[in-house]
Structures are given as C-alpha cells and as structure tokens.
Figure (cartoon, rainbow, N blue to C red):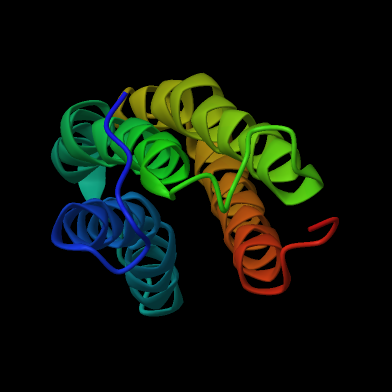
Length: 151
C-alpha cells in the first residue's frame, strides 16, 4: 500500500477529489428542490421531460459522485501515514453515513424521480423529503469530519 504524509501531493490530490466529488453529490440536493418549489409557487411544473433529466442525472452524475466521494475518502485514510485508521469511531460513523447517502440517492431519489417523470404528483413531495434527508446526511458528515469524534 502506498502511504503518504498528510499534506503531500498525492494526499492533497485525493483530498481535492474527495471534496469535489462530495460537492457534485450533494449540490443537486440543494438546487433541485429550490427550482421545483419556485416553479410550484408560480403555478408551473417542470414536466415529465425535466424530471426524466433529473432521473438520468442522478443515475449518471450524482450517484457516481457519491460513490467516488467515499472511494476517495477511503483512499485518504490509506494515504494518511497511519494518522487515520479504519478502527477510529469517526471513520466508522462516516462509513455508515456514506451508506445512508448511497441508499437515499440510489434507493429513494432515483426511483422517485422516475415516478415523477411518469406523472406521479405525490412522488414530487417524496422527492422533497428525500432531498431533506440528503441535507441532514451532509450536516452529519461535516460534523463527523470536522470534530472527528472518538479520535
């Protein structure tokens, strides 16, 4: 296994990719609800085509970015010159939150977007709830990664 010091070039590349992937994974959870609620207040709808685009985006961009955020996070642990270990509490919590994120994106949002694209109006409200879940996951992940409980 390659081990690098925290702050080394390789470590910083993984950190950059980890943060970038997290931004791409979570950004739609903020943009899409604001867009849809703004249109709903104006008495308009995105329509099935736009919701199909959201479904495709979730499958092809948001979901893979969520997977890569975790993969690069695992890489950071491996590259951390043993400063961070898989046995640390905060890393275990981060893994659980990552699996929750993947479950929300692939298990809840993706099927819901497909239902909205098929004309299911009730699914739009569920999508908003699932985006709220993404917001909570992000907040908890940031807390865990900043304060690192159990280190």
